[in-house]
Length: 189
Image 1 (cartoon, rainbow, N blue to C red):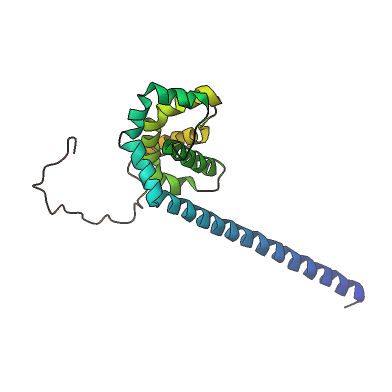
Image 2 (tube, rainbow, N blue to C red; image 1 turned 120 degrees about the horizontal axis):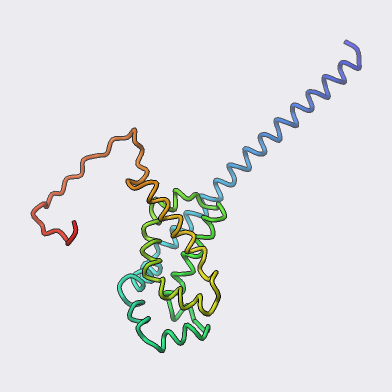
C-alpha cells in the first residue's frame, strides 16, 4: 500500500469518526431536550398541585369568580387595567393556563401528556373564565389569553379524537366494582 492510499484511508476513517460523533451529539441533544421537558413538565405539575394553586382553582370553580363578576365595581376595576394578581387570584389562574398553552403550542410539552389529564380541566376553566377573558380582551385586545384559548381548542379537538382516552388497546382494563351500589347517585350518573 502506498502513501496516497494510506492517506485516503485515514481521511475516510477521520470522516467516519466525525460523522459518528455528530450522530452521537444529535442523539445526546435529543435526550437532553427530553430530560429538560420532563423536568419542566414536572415543575409545572408540582405548581399545579400545590395547595395555593388548588385554592385558586377552588376560587374559580366554587362560584367566587361568578359572584365577583356580578359586581359592577369589580368589572369596572377590570376595565381600568389596574389589576393586582395577588388580590385577584383568578388572574393568576388565567396566567397559569396562558403559560401552559404557550408551552404546548411551542412544542415544549407534548400535547398528549397535557391533554390526558389537563384537557377537560382546561375546557371547564375556560367556561368559567370566559366572561372575565371577554372583559380583559376589551382592555388588552383580542390576543389576551389566546394561548389559553389555543390550549382549550386543542383540548376539544383531542377529546373528539380520543373520546375514550388513550388507554392502550392491547392492555385489559381491570374490573372496578363499586362496593356501595346502594348509595344514591348524583343526577345524571
